Image 1 (spheres, rainbow, N blue to C red):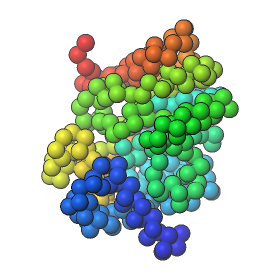
Image 2: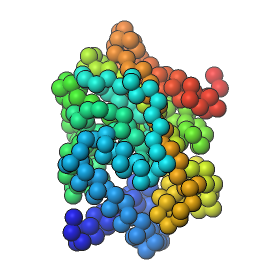
Image 3: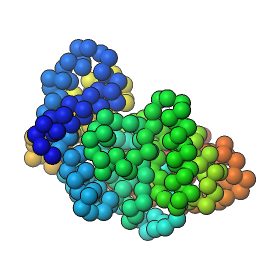
Length: 298
């Protein structure tokens, strides 16, 4: 990618960051981010560009593993043998941010993958990344189109990855209330399983996104709430990894794979509402198995 395209991508990434964090309408903060965030946005743009280029040369999982190595201290995968290697698969994962999608891609040994995500500006430029996406927009007509595309992909025996929360969730390894966040998961999962009952449901738990050093950093503690603190911690960690050799800014990314189940195993009646509850329970069981301290009171 030439210098002009890289600079354009950097500016798009910077706008995407402000939009995702809902800071683009706060003029002073937006101005500060433009001034102080230009270089980190350039680093992120460069990483995205390299991922896009590697996708044309190697597998999804290999591309993901390479990218993860630059942002973490390795990758720990548990129960990867539980991942189905063929047939329609709906992967549901928590969304602690930063490199969670790379962790999910790393466990797959398939190329027939679609990722459900909100539309980002950089997707227009990075075509290899864009071809993997089923994008969600606020527009209701667009949502219906995406729902139809998800169902079609499953009917075509593909893998669909979705983060049902639709927003940032706590990193289970460090941040409390990961179990509570599951209550906000989308009800659409039950619809997909009902419409394509041959689909297997696979819960995946991502953790180890944040280091203790980043979570407890002074900048992170400026966050007005837990979510904002996590966003500030991720920004701190990303920048520190590029300017510091301190090993405390990196930790292994952990991926725990649950048991793949057909919809009828979750609920024999295939009732979408009951399927939704069953999916959340599967994820809650996995979460509490790995991090018992995250268990909520009955």
